[in-house]
Image (cartoon, rainbow, N blue to C red; front, side, top):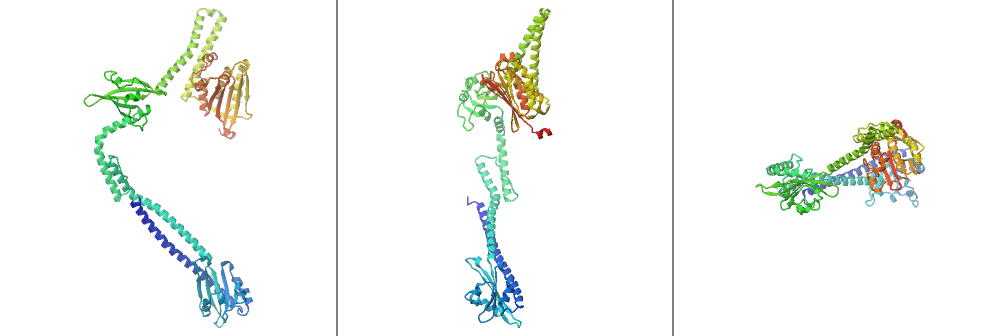
Length: 607
């Protein structure tokens, strides 16, 4: 990997930036240090001029107290500058110093014992002495010394002002600057590596791409195109490679175009396809057929034709299919056993001389078609059965009336009442069918508004209270005190509640009990209707919402049910963004649970 030209680019960029940052860093640090030391020198010079001016106004040589009184104001202890006034005598006597230890050390006030004697003598000779005392091990202990001569009225040197400034703050600043430059150097190097990587990649990437594509072409894959990213030499190389590939591919494409078209059609066709030789060796299975026949796509086809279809149909044997008719064409039905029904259409294929080579089998999934057909037949049968009984009754009673019973007024009225009841039953069935049809095709007109579910339940209880009393049943209601606002079609919700409550009353024996609860749970209202009636067998519960499905058909018809009520209820509740569930145990009762979204008071105002 490190032999790649990419890493050579990165190394060169890294070294260039590294050297530039080192040179810049060293130069900046030196300039910073010189600048700050120059600022200190200027400050000390300014302070020395101020002190000199002050000393000229007093007798500083003979009155140390006066000196201290006037110089203390320039002490500037916060800046780390020390001020010492030295008299030009044989002992270099210290007249005043901000450092008390210079004057109290064994009573000796000789400045040369504590300060730089060379600088003092230089000042006594009329010069301005300056020296940087730099501690190389700990630069925070470094200091700057400057000595200025003091002239008397006769312009003679009467003494010297010795100023000492602590350089700790300067070198702290320099140290922080050095740290910042070091961090910037590392960041610059990091960015350099990243940018160098991408720059090198922009150069080596196309070269590697051409190399990889050329290797693939050498292995027989001629569908290779290199992306042209620039107009330079590398871009020209990529363009020429693409031109070569296109020319070579065009020649090969002319030879295999028809084969690829056929392969594409077979691969992406919606039906499954299996091709086998007349000996039964499978030569092709498209993905759809592998999916239908549960063949692992990662497993090579090693089984023969008869082995693949042995578990599905004993009639799908290669010999029987080829000898089935004169042209060996036909179809078979295959039941896979997991609810999927396939139709197999087969035909032989020949070689260029017209000799039989094998057979092609096309598989079509007709499961949904079969289910729809069965549902249609079942629906027609159910509707016919539901209409047959009342029609037979009406016809029988009508014939009886025509045969002379009509003269018996009391008996005739009784017969007409039966006819009217059966007519109403058929009308109710037709209404339910029309309502289901409108719900299915979303043609129902909804009159949705904010309604109180609690009031709907109370009204429904009043409607069915007489029916419950006739069967010595008790209806127990547990409703919330406050209103339960929902956005719904009041008549449709009333229809659902009425249907469920009437079912509980119908299928609960005399002396039974029915419970109605309305519970609030966050933004959901739960309406529960529970009874202790005959219940529903466990195996019938999954089909309870199917149309015309009845657990006890004879009893349902006796009680006037059409078998469509729960289907309609489910459609209505789902149209209101809710759910309905049925829980039951045979012999112990049934519970219907409806969940509907509620709206808060503020939402109800805005609706």
